[in-house]
Length: 507
Ligand code: ADP
Image (tube, rainbow, N blue to C red; front, side):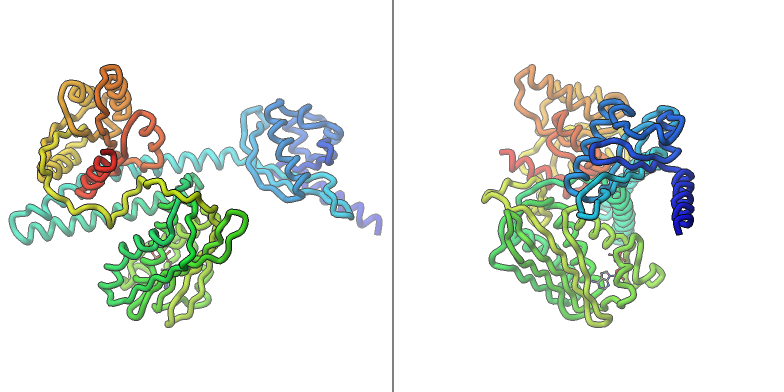
């Protein structure tokens, strides 16, 4: 028996020594008890046993050791397993990123006695993820720029084509362009969700108002299909704090699916307050329909990336199989859970459960402009003078055309220095600057102009950024250099309405 056990631990040790990762054991006082060969080699120890009795401070720089010891302390105090990324170095003494899984070792009375750790070098994986992300971002930018030219010009053709046929063609090109743009945005969202690079904002939200806005947005689609759209709201809904845009977007996505997969009957949005505990409101949001339902064996697949119940050659239900994947990621990002109950042929019900922090009783005016409240585009009554700086000829032509049609007096430049000069020498009501200009970047122009504006005691000129980048990526920099608001390409009439709403709010 003894022999067998000895053999077993020898075999285990052999396995651990051949693993391409670090395995180690520390006691509760922070002293190493054991490590595998791989870790011993990296630390420059001749023998694994040389680690016995050493602390992290003797093996690593004090910064690194401090970070490791802080995490270890949490494990000792909480008795929980942790999975985290740690900074260290590799066999050639280069900085490396490790994925560490650390678990407490407990004695027979369940007291934490020490910990075991496994650290895997994920530096190259991280580097390729970053490269992939950068590639995607750049490609998205480079695709969005010509696409916004196509959408802008086809918009003009759809309005001003000489024959009805011309206008119809313009409309079709515009629809196709918008569809491509939607797909591009979805791919970017998937990539951002996968790399968890999305930030969460904290907004104070009136759930009742949110539900009404969602209904206003989706009612036309439901009516067009002859579906009844019910909204049931708990009377007690409190003010809560969460990311307003993400919450709205994910519920919108579920409502859009409910409408898409329902031929007759109704769809319903229901919001209930389940409990209030320790300054947190437990909220349940239900989105149900009387549609085609989902077969039981498919229920666990629908949240997978690119999974579609109906492949694209069955053109009845359009889609990319990304919606629910993003919905689930967003729900998790907001700290919630999502479940689905469904019966084929009868309908589906998606249930979201969140614990939102309760808000103080005030609502900051939100900077997100609900589409339903945008005024209809009206021709500009008092002629406003605007400056557009944009180096892409197609985009410049499209933006200029939209603004001229709305009655603006438009000055255009194609370079940064010329933009700065125009801003300093002419008088404008507002300016629209592309970020990627050939000589001075739009951000540099804004920053230099703001400086000049201050030095010369000029009143604040509203300056808007126009970009093909994803807004998240450049938001911070744009705010810092003094842009008032960022607009994504393609620039459409809706953006003029947003600008007007913004200017109205400021006055
Ligand atoms: P898409 O709708 O673009 O195909 P989603 O990720 O939104 O992608 O949904 C994945 C799949 O889940 C859909 O293709 C469909 O088969 C199924 N599904 C989602 N919502 C519903 C619903 N309300 N009723 C029936 N099936 C649904």
